[in-house]
Amino acid sequence: MTSLKFKSTIKCGGCISTVQPELNNLPGVESWEVDILHPDKILTVNSSTGDSQSVIDALKAVGYQAELLQA
Image 1 (cartoon, one colour):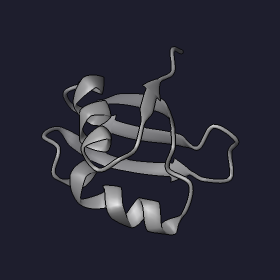
Image 2 (tube, rainbow, N blue to C red):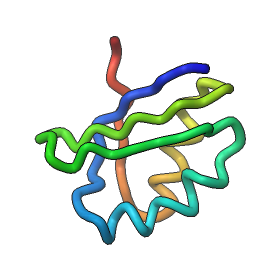
Image 3 (cartoon, rainbow, N blue to C red):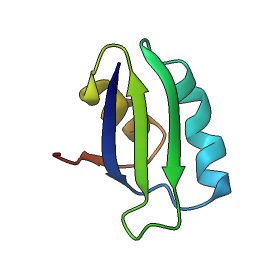
C-alpha cells in the first residue's frame, strides 16, 4: 500500500462530506483522512494503486484542488 500526501483546499466538515463519495469510490483507495487544522489542509490517501492523478482529478470534479507533496 502506498501513502500519498496532498496539499488541498478541503477546509471544513462540509468539504469533507462533499469529497467523501468521490474518494470512497476511487479504485484502490483503502482509506483517507484530511488534517483540516494543518495550514496546508493535508489529505493523506492510502492506496493500493498509488495513483495520485486519480485523486487530484476526483477532487477537481467536485470543486477542490490537491497538489501531491513529495516525500
